[in-house]
Length: 493
Image 1 (tube, rainbow, N blue to C red):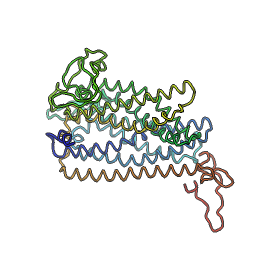
Image 2: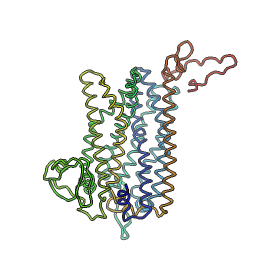
Image 3: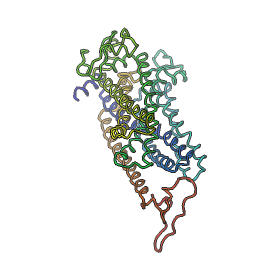
Image 4: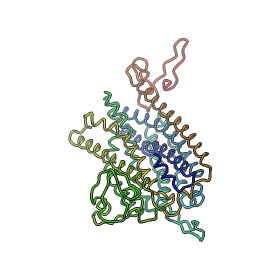
């Protein structure tokens, strides 16, 4: 640990390490919420469409409850996302001051998409029971598009930081003559965007399905749980083989556009052909590798379909222009963890697909549902590892080849930044604890409402408003008894 911190902070301003750690912490925390923000609207609307097309009250009830989770997640995401936007200006004034005119359009797109998404979520939540079913569903359709637009804005900015273009430099080295379209559509945008979008769909699908997989393991095998598992898991499983293709595509794009980052991902020290592939392992300052599993010539074959493919090594550029060996090892391990998790998810998706082809139903093995219960957490870890690969692999550049991270960092004293880091950490712990408490209370309330004779059952055995189909007039509210008061709309739930 001491060695890692020393190497990360070597030859850098004192404020660089706390600024980096603060940004990494807030980004790693925020990204946990992103899959639900980007993909849960689509999953909810798929379930909503099924409910309307088949007149299925269980599907409509699931869609309505998922929309409530979506709203809570959006509210938490607003807080963590706002903190991140402030940190860009506070921690990295050199980046925003010099390059903001070139790549800031991506943040502008994301901001407009955010406001649009907020309005659409409000309308969608309000529309349950208050709008005709078809109108309500049609008003919800732009929600996934708004979420994808926001992701496009952020990925556009990040892709530009990896492959900057769309400007010329004047005599002082400042960007002029900005070409907005070239600045948006950089070489890394396509591979990063589609890889990210499919990762969000997989993660959200496996997370939602994992909740119902746990219920299946605990003996809850009614239609509510079967449907809640099948729809999101099917979407995620269908996206998984696509992600294998996209993952290979983005790795080849990194090989072409950012060869030094590729060398860090594969811990390649010297430029050569017939380069071996290492699964895990640690790179040392003398170029040696310890640990891990070595596959002779495989890295060259994967990079160019031939063992004669020349792979650029880290030593091809000066030491100050490349990740140090500790950073390269971090990137390599993060990349390998992501690939291993993706491969395990592909096997799980194949198991699911074969069961459907043979029996027209999901597998019944408890091991399958154990895997499905873990798939959501595994997907989140894979997303975190993907961002570590992208961001740490770009070091020491914040704008690849043009500005180092140390040149963009704030001059604020390091002690103030460490204090801010501690404060943000405490606030985030409270925020995520509140998020967990709200979700658990919603789960308990819904479970109680679903029990026979519970609050979801009205007088005479009729279903109370929450348990009934969410469209159409509400069942009559029972009159207040002597000395009592009538229950509020929704049964106080």
